[in-house]
Image 1 (tube, helix red, strand yellow):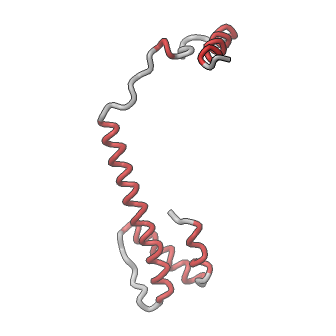
Image 2 (spheres, one colour):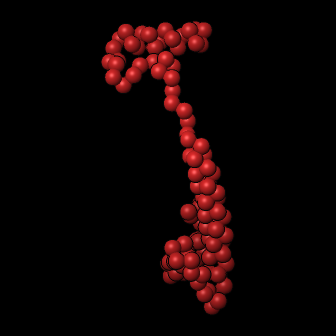
Image 3 (cartoon, helix red, strand yellow):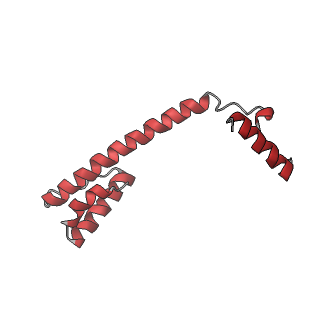
Length: 111
C-alpha cells in the first residue's frame, strides 16, 4: 500500500526516477527482488522507505490472517435465537410487523 506521507519523497524525483522506483516496488512486492540502486542514492533511500512500510504492512496482514483463522476455528458467532429476531425472511414485512418492531424497540429503550 502506498501512503500519502511518502509523496514528499516522491515529489523530489524526476519522472524517470519515479517510474524506476514504482517498478522496483512492484517487483519487490511480487517477486521479493531488492533492486540495485547503488548508482542512485536518492532512489535507494526512497525505496528503503517503501520497503520498510511494505514489510511492516505484510507482517500485520499475516498476523491478522492468523488471528482470523484461529477465531474461525472456534466456530464463529452462534446463531441468533428466533425469538430475538423481529421478523424472519419468510414473514412479510407488513405494517403490523413494523408496528410490532417499533413497539418492541420502544419497550427496550423505555421511550
